[in-house]
Image 1 (cartoon, rainbow, N blue to C red):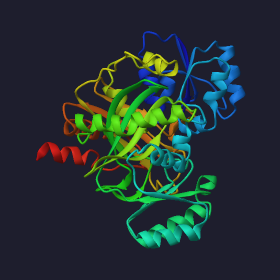
Image 2 (cartoon, one colour):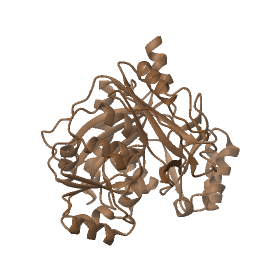
Image 3 (cartoon, rainbow, N blue to C red):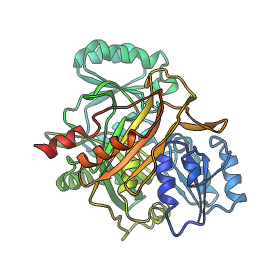
Length: 423
């Protein structure tokens, strides 16, 4: 099978690394890729926003299967263009990708199908939103409706913070993503990420992970795209998995099919495990980043046929096999992230990969023969262990092999799970 992978981040490096292990693979191409992905795939200089160019490449190279990593091309309809040309593609249609592309769309779906989630209201102007916030009080959550690269959500602990977040959205801080705002109730509990493959009808549960969104130790500071993750998430007990499937995933699959937008690809349910049980915070329509990195480390099944089955309506009867061990990844980011940061700073050395550790590239490039940091989140130092604590120790030990002056990371990734293990 000749495969084209779309994307350039840590998630796509993890997918490329896993797909490259498949005996069914004959050639793997990646666009636009990164230096880590280049170790697994042939990098092609495609403008992935130009859907016609992607389609032309697929025809020229007789590509059998396209795997779309990030959300933006899915929301923009790349999967629709490829499907119309009879090229199998992993990822939902633009209509189904609204589950991530519009927070309001998802909340309305939850309301229609009785899916547990926080109470909410949608607003297209600042003053009514502010009046609602004053009425509700803090803590409260403000979300830009559209795609904002993981930065459009404010968990406001004070009224002032909430009102400022409304001003930011309507002042254009998130571009067109903030033209509409969803204000929703603050959910108290423990967050978890839950992943399933879906072929439109059949759902194959994958695994759970827990992400660390805040930039600082102790879950302090502003939200980011994720500063680290581990899998599995201890809070996702078998009972919670079963409830999540029954109360959240299955009604969503049914609802999307009934609305004429059957979902194919990967469901990434961001959950809050509250006193009442699992509640949906948000849906993403692609593998998480950095959750994908820990999932791929634990997966023992061949990934490629699973993705292809999801894309072609053939998931029924398939299983995914996992290591019983834990995986943990630490994100090394550019100083200043998630605010402004210097680009093109040199990364002098990385630790050697082993059977138990792997560094996934997120925001890197080669410049004059030298590896440089080009993004906010730059490297994912990932390790396996019998427990989360052991995986954490291995990841931080490997991290010492990174020589990059402009990088920083959290020192406490996995703290909740490690606390559980030691009490």
